[in-house]
Image (cartoon, rainbow, N blue to C red; front, side, top):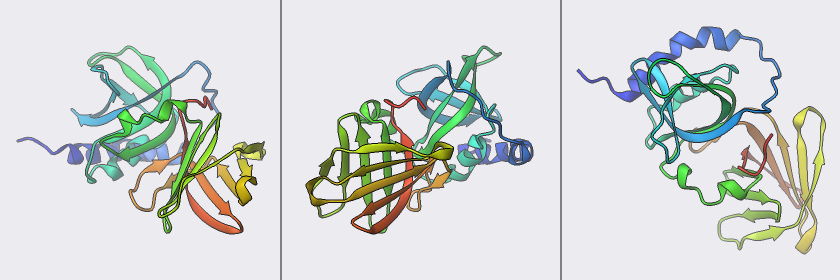
Length: 221
């Protein structure tokens, strides 16, 4: 009898939850590690990772206590391809094409199009939220603010680094006072359940909107 992938994924959770939930997190340099995006699948009691546009498959080892296994199990019942954006090291192992030792989780979500996102490689940051919907895309050329029923707003910005890995992007161009405050904190998208590694707060002319974010392909943090 064939077992549904979502059930296989859920079955992985108890095997790792105990050690990951109580493990002390330590700061590990990501220098020399590889950042990859791709599809997650449960097979043979293991969580496998297939990079975008590749046929190789790697067994996931959550070496950085990122909670990737728990997050994947939570999203297993939602529709769409289970996508992950992670950084770590590749090593050889028996079976498949090796092992991916994950140390940094940028995002995990259900998406059929994340692998073909044409903007990812040129962006340094993407943040978004709901109620009302908003989205900010940041690159070396500026930031673009999108909101329903309003024209896209392209703005130059200044970036201010703050303690504990936080930073602030601000702009006062075109008669608008726009600030984007970002912190390295696990954030769950209220509409999709996607998990991202940054919390974001957008302030426009005194109004505050909250959401989540992740680093684009042009940022190496």
